[in-house]
Image 1 (spheres, helix red, strand yellow):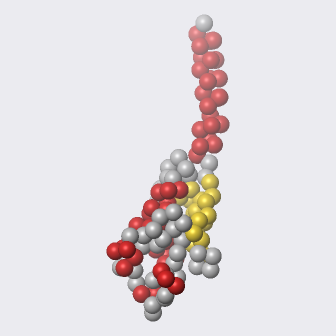
Image 2 (cartoon, helix red, strand yellow):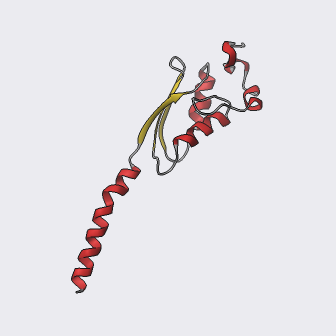
Image 3 (cartoon, rainbow, N blue to C red):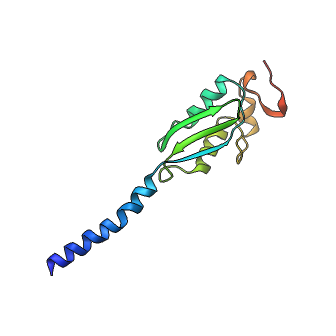
Length: 116
């Protein structure tokens, strides 16, 4: 009887293991992030330097960030929020005007105006 119980428990654990591993598998997301220069790149990528993010790279030419992250540790919505919190608009979240206003002049991207 004890052997049957142990065997049943092992089967149950084995049945859920692939799902647990799949939930931890990193996923890649690409989304729009507004910015202008190298300082923007450092700020955007720095905002994504958190637990659960394995890789982040922002392209000024494409105005897009590529992020590899573990959805069990951070959500895509949280990624958008973190970027907006440092002053950069994303496809989902607009940075607060007071945060945007504190960006250096070379980082101003709204209204197509770049101040140097």
